[in-house]
Structures are given as structure tokens and as C-alpha cells.
Image (cartoon, rainbow, N blue to C red; front, side):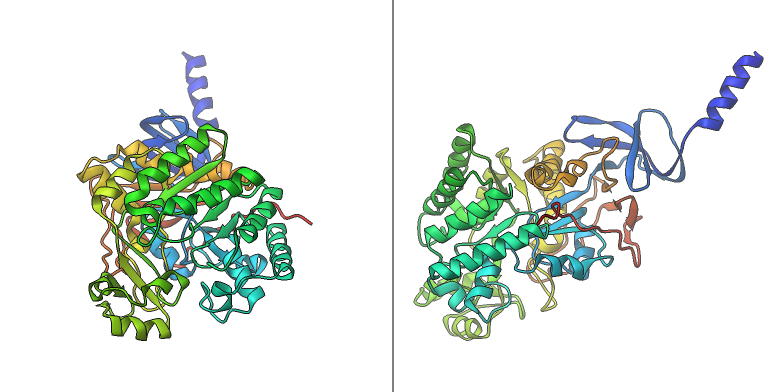
Length: 471
């Protein structure tokens, strides 16, 4: 009896006490397929235990009835500022990336966010931005002048390659390209950018050339499939649903066949029937003589008004964000059911006081509408598309991503604790600045950014997600 009491006392004294314990939640890990009630122990920003038995913690969160999932990973978010990060946090996002447009100054981009960010963040070296710099385009996001409409000389392409290489050496996560915004970029120029990316084992995140409303998006996909096959650079096709509309099943079939033949290709989607971009971009060069009713499909973000031909021409000269209603709910369902696309927002910031609802509500909309209400996806598959899949896309170049998108011992404590019965988006086209509900707790590197459904004032535990620096 005395020996038994000694062993019990010894066990109690040596049991580890964690910084944080998330107890009694439904833990879903998409890699191991764990889906069971567990307690998660966190120390020093890392998951130290996933246990069927109770754990001791300095702070214990009772997650009974809640889902404990990896924090969501957004590979396509243009709103990379403090305000946008707070809306993303309330939508369950712990890592946010600008990988389509990217930047021409990778080192400066990371320096501007150091120690100031609620969530993790990363960026690509962007061909769009590099081309604008080389071609001296006056715009600040996507080109409206020579960066869009001028064919580059061999010397200019050489300079673009040099700047792309510099960005990779400074730790850029990937390459970003958007031939639809740089229509004067030749196939050879795009191929040269893929060659640079291939040398750095970087994926190319591409907005396909052209648009589904005025041509065959299959052509745009063929261009970058060929570039990937020629160079060996991995390919990621952004928002395949909005880029291809009713052609999406064709493009998904092409990607599936290319993957079966050994190409490293992934894709993404967002769950809205409208997209958003800049009205002054080359994307709208073909809209000069559209029928009057077509302009009604455009919503000017700054005022919320639907456009006419006259206001289209006026605002196009001014420049700014516009929402384009061009997709169908049926096509979203089709693409979402497919196992290939992961989820990404293509969100923007709130410079005009408003934005597309996807900026604040994408992930909660997936869980609230398409999982809970309409049963388009099972919960575990939705979580896989929002966590493990994007983490794996980046792992080859960014080894730290192997510790994200998972609830496992040794993984980063980027954790989303949400209520599956209430999680829901509230942002709309009229009011994009409405936070989602249902995320009860959000931890980034083990620090609470959301607690009891509210933002934690001043929390800035977000870290740079970056490829290893090189010479």
C-alpha cells in the first residue's frame, strides 16, 4: 500500500504542466485522419501532447462540443495589413500569403511586418510587380500602362530574371504570375520566369491568361502546363472556378490528367459567385463596347453602385476595385466537391472602407453553408482543403510548412477552435467589413489572438513564413 501511494505521488509530481491545454475538444488532424475527443498540450508555441487522457495546464480551455483543427492557411490574400489580418483571424486563418501578385521587394515586404502581425504571413516574388518595376509602370498593384501593354526587350527580360532571382535569394515563398494582367508578356517571357522558379524549387502561382467570358480558358492552362512540363517548376492555378466558370470541369480534368502523368500541379477556389479586381487593369481592356446590360454585372466597391457604360469609363480612368458577378452557385458546388481544389480567399484589404465578402468570410462560409447547411462537403474534407493541402503545396521550398496544417506533436501551435453549430460568415457585397462568428479561440504560435470569440487587443504573435535565405 505504501509503495502504491508513493508511485501515485511520484506520478503526480512529475506530470507535465503545459502552458495551455485545450481539453475535451473534437480534434481533427487531416494528415493522420485523427477525429476524436482529445486534449492538446501546448508549450513554447509548439504542440507537445495530443492525449486521450486529461492534461495539466496553466491555462485550460474547455473545448467540449467544439472542433479543434489546424489554423487555416490562405495562399491567396492581397490584404496584407493589420486590419485585414484581424478579419482573417476571426475567420480562422493563422497563416496568410500573397502569392499571386506578390512583391518586387521581398526583403522590404517582410521587414514592414516584423513584430506587427496578428497572424503568420508570407509573400512571393511577383512577376507582375517585377515587370511593372522594369517597365516603369505607374500603377501600384497591377499594371495599367507599359507593364500591361508593352512587349519586353531581351534586356528587360534579363533584368526581370535578375530581380526574380534576388527575390528568391531573399526568401520568397514562391513565384507569382498573372498573364491576364500582363497580356503583352510573351510565352517566352513567362517561360523564362518558370525557369528561374524551377532553379529555386519554387511553385508558380498563376492567374491564367485571358478570361472565360471572352475566350477558352483551356488555352491559358495549356500555356502554363507546358511551362511546368518544360522547366520542372511546380504549378499552382489560382481560383480555378472564377477563372474558368463553366469550363472549370474541363480544366480540372486537364490538371488531373497532368498530375497522373507526373506533373506537380495544384489549384484553389473560393465560394462566391463574384470576383474582384481593379477596373483599371488589362483584365477589362475588352470591355470597351460591351452591351449596356453587361456593365450591370459590375459593382464599384467604393460606393456600392452598379455600373453603366458611362460610369465604367469614368471609373476606369480613375482606377479602383470592382466586383464582377460572373459565376453560378451550381459551378461552385461542382468545383468544391472535386478533391483537387484547396480553399483560398483572393481577399483584399479595406482601403476604401469596404471589400469583397471573401476577404472576411471565406472559411466560415465553407463551414457554415457548404458543410453544415448544404452538406456539399464533409467536415474533415473541408478542413483538409483549408489546412494540410496548402501546407503541402509550399513544403518543398519552405520546410517550416511541414509543421503547419496539422494537429500533431511537434507541429506549430497554430490552432483554430470553432463551434461547428454556429460558425458562419456575415460579410456581404454591400458590407464586406463584417467579421465571421463561431471561431471561439485562435492560437498563433501558441499565443491567443482570439479568445472567447473576441480579438485579443495588441496580440501580434504572427511570424514571417519564408524560404531559407541564399546567396
